[in-house]
Image (cartoon, rainbow, N blue to C red; front, side, top):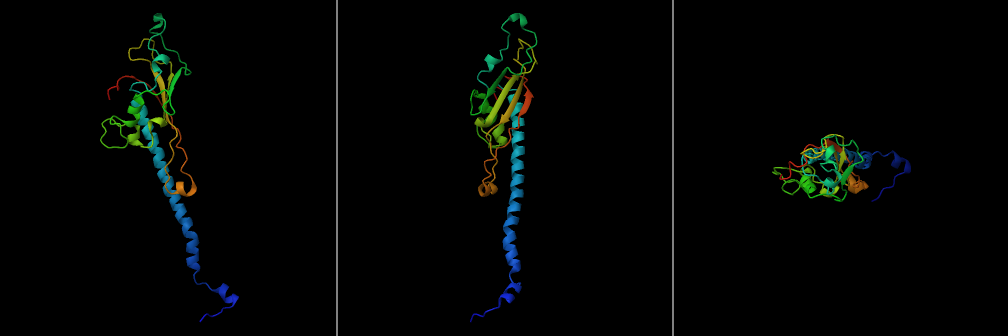
Amino acid sequence: MVSLRSPISFWQDQRGVTLTEGLISLPLVLLAISALVEFGYAMSQWNQTVKALQAGARLAAVSDPLTNNFAAVFPTDNNNPLYNGDATPNDATISSSCGPNLANCSAALTRIVMGSDGVCGVAGDPNPGICDINWRIQPANVVVTYQRSGLGYWGRPNGPVLTMRLEVRGVTFDLPLLGALLGLNRIEVPAHPVTLTTEDLKTCSSC
């Protein structure tokens, strides 16, 4: 039998209030916890990207040039042999770039990114590459730029001494929870340019 209650007794009834509050607050608490977890995961990916680029830049500084027009832009000898032995120009506008999307990139870039085994993220590679540290970074995501630095001299046996900048493009954060829920899975990881002075752009050709 259904009993009728007056409106006054209905609004004064406190039964189920805790359950109602829990149903309202639980999604908000879960969202906040998910945001904290995702933020920590994003910071891990950020740090992973920085470390991968630092390792890749150190390797690229002692590897074969990564651009196809390197020899044309940075000849070892001066056009006038009388100038061999003089300092090279300190002109950053003299540059050679590779990427994005592998434009003007040599085959040496694959070695820098994929490692000596040519596979990303597999343990045991004796000469690991960038994607062994961060598997999201592929050759098409790497941009490298060589520039005249004023260091070295014309006719240097080991080739020109340049400033090299390595950075990443088009790599997005992996946010499995909030990415799918709020559409935040297209946020790009910052470029994180790493700049080094090249040493010997030939020593690692057989790595």
